[in-house]
Length: 211
View 1 (tube, rainbow, N blue to C red):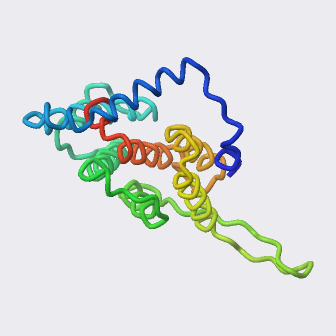
View 2 (view 1 turned 180 degrees about the vertical axis):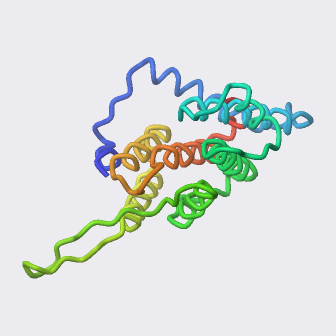
């Protein structure tokens, strides 16, 4: 949890500050955008979802042709391969997150639900474990990294409620810690990316209009 524990050391340069100002300006206009695009909201969300899914597929280097990826992004398709199952599961997860992003809660149970969704028709994802030294030289206890994830989430919420830190930096540092803590047996980068996506969508509703 080094990233979230050292938020006070972060310095934001002028270029990043200008980008953040632009982002928060858009965040402040979200109600205006909702009213302006009300009639076409579904179309905007669908287009954004499609762009996001295509970008994720390329980022993960899924073994699929561009044409096949675009079909999955735009239509209901039946998967034939392991990677196609992966993309379909990601699509279902993004759809769920898009329905009510403001209701997403950073809880271990939510991560568990996300893991089940991504694991469907694929190799199972589990929480890693490690041995923890207790009192006594030979006394070791097996601990689930699910407990470490809960501590990380508690620290995130504590920092969030303090209102001392810039929100995107806080979210980014949570993501960095999640990856560095090796919490899951596999697909950590994918699950971390989806959590990052969920948090940004929750706190910046303007992302429903842009990918």
